[in-house]
Amino acid sequence: MKWGPTRILLVVTAALIGLNLRPFITSIGPLAGTIQTQTGMGLQSLALLTLVPMLLMGVIAFTAPAIQNAVGARRAILGALLIICCGSALRLVTLTGWGMVATAAMIGLGVAVVQAVFPGVIKREFPLHVGPMMGLYSAMLMGGGALGAVTAPAVSSATGVWMTGLAWFALPAILTVLLAFLFLPVHTRQQTRPASATRLLTRPRTWMLMMCFGLMNGGYSSVVAWVAPAYQEQGWSAAASGGLLAILATSQAFSALLLPVLARKSADRRPWLWLTLAMQGIGFAGLAFMPAAMPLVWIIVLGVGLGGCFALLMIVALDHLPDPTQAGALSALMQGGGFLLAAIPAWLVAALHDATGSYAAGWNWHLACVTIVAAMVVKLAPRGYGRAMGILDDKERGLEGVTYCSGNNPGIHRSASLAGKAR
Image 1 (cartoon, helix red, strand yellow):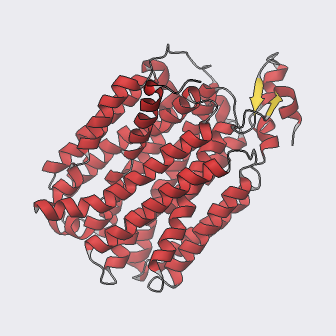
Image 2 (tube, helix red, strand yellow):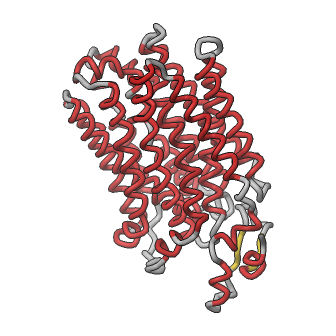
Image 3 (tube, helix red, strand yellow):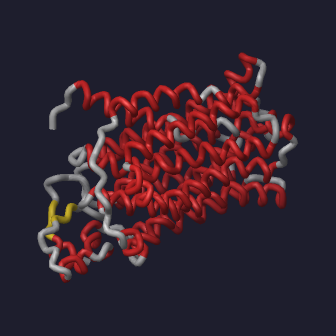
């Protein structure tokens, strides 16, 4: 594969696409007090600014194969980026709580389409570098979270208009639209098998991946929604609490970029996943029991755990199937069910706070979720991918020529029949 200027610009485009997918969520926490004062939103209403986009990310992910078949991946991504741009710009004139929820839904819709379609594009365009490219995409996604947390209060303070801190993210979005238009390749649309999504949903492994992804991202949604308000209750300023979110997102980005590279030669991702889950456990325990003692330590450790786990789970989903379209469909379904599940915890943490007067109960809930995911990861042995995804069924239909790849290391290949026999 030649890495000329066009190829490098495609990598830059992929990075910028990831950058645009989180600022609209992480910019809310540092400005939560101002938003509540200006719009009259309560704590649980404010949680809708995270819950609604997460729900859309879940629902739209289930339709991703149909969207891709109808308009193609390139058009779907371009349209979604335009929606993100328009939704961000509209926040400049949004002064009501319901208006804020509406723009969150609009941006969430665009983000949902990109997240559902783009991993399949990465596997198709970079078949020998899926791990590092997914790491880069995930790292930039987390980096966008840092961008939102740091710049939203800074821009609001500099302009004296709180809406500008939320609306300025339309600028990087429109730049990304331009680069995507120029450098995302055009491919002839190929219809996936009509029953592909239905067939994937019959596999218990698909549902387990949804559960793992959802419980992990539920922790992310709660942290970005409530870490800043939690420390503001302890007397921190909006800028200082936003700085905590920026550190969290930077730690996520570092981990999402580094861990896939370190794990690229390991077909078995489980030891790396357990490492990230252990770090999440330490972070949530610190926030629950000693929040004032070492806040930077808890946030950094939690960020490394969340970012690395996100990137590795995305890679594990793509590892399960050799065909990019089918692997992308599995990734979309994992994200669909996962984000539907991840939409609930941010609201739950708010409800627990209203009931107990503290965020500790919510952090303890996520500590329990980390334990559940760690137990489920035991099942993610790469030797079992073939059986888990029904590759034996393909053999029985006469598709014995299918090559099965466990992981993204091109040196680790098995025939469909061998993968199907593996436990």
